[in-house]
Image (cartoon, rainbow over all chains, first blue to last red; front, side, top):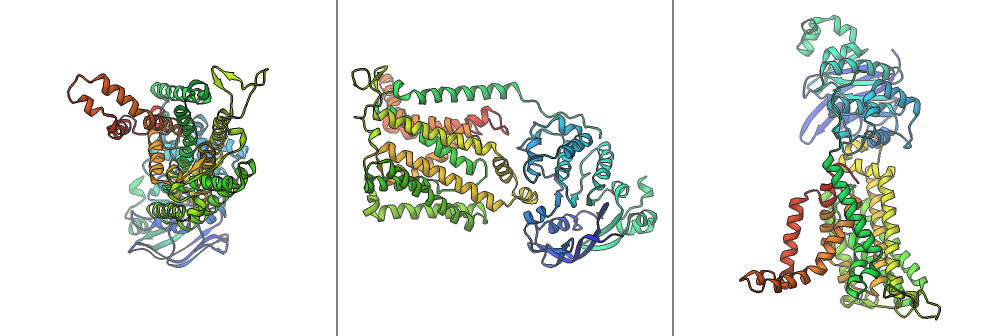
Length: 240
Length: 367
């Protein structure tokens, strides 16, 4: 396995009086899709937000390509090449699709090759380029959120539950898009949808009650039904 | 990738019609303001027209803060006053020359930007309500200082001064073949007209500058910050720096509006520049016009200024016309004009909840 692009070392995060993360340690290798699975309230979103500096870790260290980014400002972390696609899509509804995309560029100009790739993956964005983002459907908003993370070369994209609330047909199409993105970028994907996650992930970590309960390859977890049942309260067989 | 079948909502016919109405109103106002010296040559109307020009700039610059970036500040009149007082003091001390206008104006703008940067960097990190309180305190301090340092500022009485000679009513702006001042449609092309067009074109340049700002990438970032600070940060934008930058830009533009006010009035005092009543007027104009719509400033400033200057006259006429009806003339007594102004404001807010331009153009679209 390649050297980790991102390391979380014994991270503790509190939100107000609540202790959410209790010593989370993760090693995300460079390249491919890596999945963080867990139930609602397990600490998945908090982990991503802590990486982005949106919530400060109380203890522990976060290293990106070996550099400690634990105390860095969110905008500085983003400028290092980490993109974040939040759970609620994170688009700016009052702006057009074009303005949303332009915001994610480094200098306000588009790399035409990248833009063409995005149009190929998400033709709706080209069609509704000058429309307000609020007028897009839920699936199109999710496409926009993901496309925004792709418009510049990023080293790491953090994606929080991209399938939430989307129709199964759109979810299947999103698998294709993520495979395309993963060819040049490392993805850390937070999910509850195990079927979606297993079709993409090379490695998987399961978080429960703010602690990493398991980490390994996705293939191991897919093979081990007992482990799935113990960690996720599900069996893959039952979902097929 | 397959697409969902949902199409973005088409712009409604009503929205298009509304925008056309808004643009039509703005066109009429622009024409009236451009030809104001010819169309409305009396002193009072000229004063209203000049006030509208200056307040369009002031309101639009405030809208950069509240409408485009989501910053609530009560210090806008402080910057307006700094521009006006610096110009006024320079004209008083240095004499009525362009050097005084330029040096005084530059000082006013410079001090405004410095103060804005200081207030912004120190307090734009905190919650909106605390920032609003800081700006309110700063504006109050400035008003007290203007009152206390009466040797420079004239205290509560303000300062009267002379302006560059070209703005003197005796100046012949244009002359006929006999060397007499040219008369256009019965109006003399004198220094008063020059002063009005100084205000008009000064305001126009500042307004176009603001249109350029909101149409630029900076404007898009500001709108993103207003919508969701955290998302903007996560895209790599330093929100505090952007908010401070726009606070400084708005302060500089407000100070420039103060320069225009000082030159137009030939008088600067607390009541004309620094008073909290002006801050309330600005807020009302932004709300009436529509927040986050640069064009709303034109309609808001016009509606409020015209109402403030002419509602009394209108009520006088209405009161006389209804003299035979019991109770009605009392209700329409010109002394009750503030009551009717308040009622007008309530009706405007009720029928145009997003402001006149905002409601006409449909929410979410910035004409």
